[in-house]
Image (cartoon, rainbow, N blue to C red; front, side, top):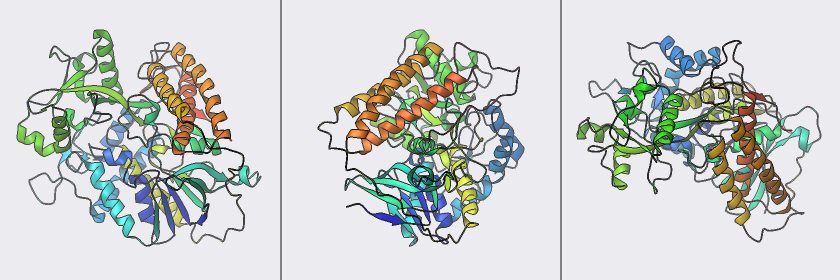
Length: 533
């Protein structure tokens, strides 16, 4: 049976960004947190490396700012970078106050162990062994479960945002909430709120190979774009250089922190190769490392390369990388004695819904935070361990902005209920699974690490046919979570392809053989796509 829920703030997504914001607002407003899987299932949960923050006396805020801008290949918003870096420490202190346990350095009880990752000039990654995301996510979730003002809705997936322009025929577009599918009950509900926050993460599942969990299907980006949000820089998809290569490993990430502790990338014959591609070798920015691995694999026809940290002691590896060590052992790989087979995989969506410093989109009442958003922090390439930092800083800043609008006035409008009277149950789901597989495969083949216009146009033609099939199926059949995710992935694929075609240069994560050089004749610009609505 359908229902209508009323809240002060609706947060779609239960990762670090969503839970942080919920906890920031819960003492002041009634909060709904909607999650399409079990509550802890998010990209945040699987983050291994840590969170960048300046804590070492040898480090500085300016150094963190400079490193981030350098990694962003000329497209970072300098004001956003400075804002994020300057608010990093207070975000970490807030996490510690919530009970998050970070690894100590073993010297004193007050100091934390810091690692160094690609693109960073200092050790500034605070972490909880090699399972930082799990520690943060589970701690925040326990806090959220205990708060009486936070109502959690697991196994609920957003369908479409409710806007005044589309649903009330009001030219002054405003977000009023979201239609949501209760997956287990197979019913659709209306969640009405003066403030809606999209915190659904990225879109790695648009590619065949990804480090992301299955929930990373670009839902917030697609819903926001369909509602009229502007989107920027969707061509910049970060491919993590080192995911475990094993037929049963699915999407297990081998943290960049291994390379920070001296791990070397090797070819099958045991030779090193990264020094041929960048002065920083293994500690080069991720786009360079991923392209180097892709180049060597294609040149040699190999299925993978190898990451070797066996020069470190067994005790060091077990202490600093217990999760990775155990996971490799599960697949018969002893990383204390032998190199780990690795391949690049889609990892992070640098573009997203354009927001200001408060996380607000161009639609009143609608915010986006975390990987769903484009704040200008990452530019053309995200520096390692700036992602959880962005989640925290902008969850805090958007919460402060929302608090200033309290208390909310009583809503006087009536939103039409979800109408499923003209659709029928699907007789079979093979069309969805086939289209899902086809989409992810041609995105990997044609819109991957190295691109050409010919490949992009091929992908565009395939996508147009696929989108028509998806649209026809969506208009005729009852919705399901698989169908909604497929629809969202197709929209995200369109944004990636069109953005890539618009950028007539290679920059950061976008590398095309047709324009292999970076355009230095004019100032770099973001690739901005207007909302679909």
